[in-house]
Amino acid sequence: SKKNKWLTSEELLDMMGLVQTVPGIIACNSAIYVGRRIAGLGGILAAAFGVCLPSVLIILMIAMFFPNLNPENPWLLGAFRGVRACITGLVMMTAFRMAKKVLKSWFEYGIALAALILVLLLKVEPVYVILGAMVPGVLYAWFQLGRQSRTEKGGGEK
Image (cartoon, rainbow, N blue to C red; front, top):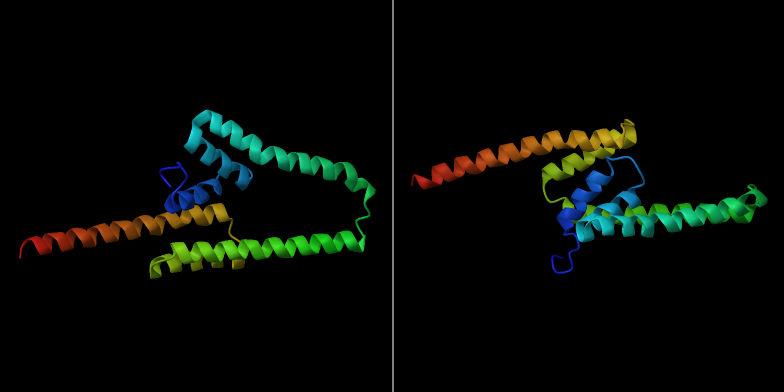
């Protein structure tokens, strides 16, 4: 909300598109984007350390103990299998919620379906799909503006 300086739904979606096109960890890129938006340079630093440092510390702890763990241990393999399945479900839930909020027209459903096909079946890199989606998006906006202009001109003569 504007009151708390948080991102609106539209700004969040714009941010998601942007952070996926730049190199780096999406969570860190997102935190840095929001940190800058809310508090400038101090927000960038706080967000970067707040999001990235815990992950680095956890990875260091795992790395210290991992050599002593048997990678064939069925308990360890089961734990990782459960975590992977859980994360997959959470990502699917997030995608479903985002789709319900964002996709409002046949055009947007078409772009989403095309992106899914390009990435999933044709193995096109997501960054190219995101950048490529800008072209039909701009053309659609141009078409809509032209239609609106024609309607206004036609409506003003009556």
